[in-house]
Length: 323
Length: 219
Image: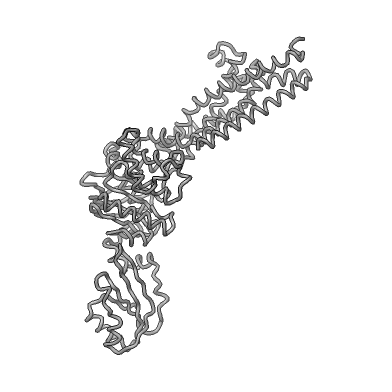
């Protein structure tokens, strides 16, 4: 478990992390989300000790991440594999040697039967058997990130830190990388922390997220709680919701379908029971880790407002009036 | 007059070619080995280096610039006492290796430094994230990734040393350039001038070709 408590960090006069507190549980896929400049990457670099923090504490299973204690920090870093937006592979080493590199930093012989087996197994895991002796420049972006993932796993880490790992990849390739991360999380029990500004990453894999804005955690929770019915304007602007396209007359009512009650035909029931007319002017379905969540916006006459409110209240669905 | 006869020409040129190769080889080797030291110190202590130490970087950088801006002809004369100390004499092919090397060190040091610092910062960060020590990053990342670039710099160095070795001929260094000046220019022997020029052109071309080939293979 990683426990971040009251962490602050400044670059000269600019405070980039303002009193950050988070708990990242074992075997979770934890998203640190926000727009660029929110401090997400800095926070991730603090967790790994690449960057020192000014005050507060970060502990991993009770042991403090302290960049002044070099020996302890190295051991900590061994437990955390890391992948990056720009892949960061060594251009002159082939796939095999790139994956083996962290072993060399730890004085592990890379030519032994055991090491060879392990590296080949990782190459199989990421699906690059054909490319074992290819140089990075012969690989596509997605393949490079797969090499980087294998390299990050070669020291048997407990955590995998991903710094905008899919931001440079197109949507289809991103999906492939995300399902690989999910597989690693499920099958190897590795806790994954992803820093991202991409909603599709959050939706596809994160079990929990923290939303960072201006160096503070604005909220934390399950992604469907945070993003389907966003209450904070910062999150709304992050999602770039198109509520300005809604009709200017009448009352706009947004209804949310969360998980289990997604199947209930509330809208048609309402039309039948109330005998009122209304138009559906906006709708969205979203897929969070294979669960479908959605929302739609109805436009009703001002005079029907009371009746519709009462009906929705009785149905126990989540809804709100958009003013 | 034997030395000026056509029969002697081959011998003269062969000896000169050998002297050029000898001077260029040793001054290249020595300057690259010695030049690595300031290059590494500059890389490590630079503001974006692994251990930024501003005064060390600034002072060393200043010294490199000072030595680089010394005109070679002046250096040739200035270092005579030092040459005598190292080689035992101030004149001759071996003796001329000293000024050649001294002038080449700051040049190649800067080139190696630039090559090393061109290493992708992300790759260095990745190495750090796996717990690599500074020495490991220096050897396994900085130097390893920079080999082709450094090689390009060495080719550049060899070619400019061929040129400088002609000037070194003036302190009795001999070599192709020396023959071109003494026989070709001062004695109006255009055949010497012509052959010497052709040899130098071919030499430079061959070095550049080998360099390009190795660069491709190594990168």
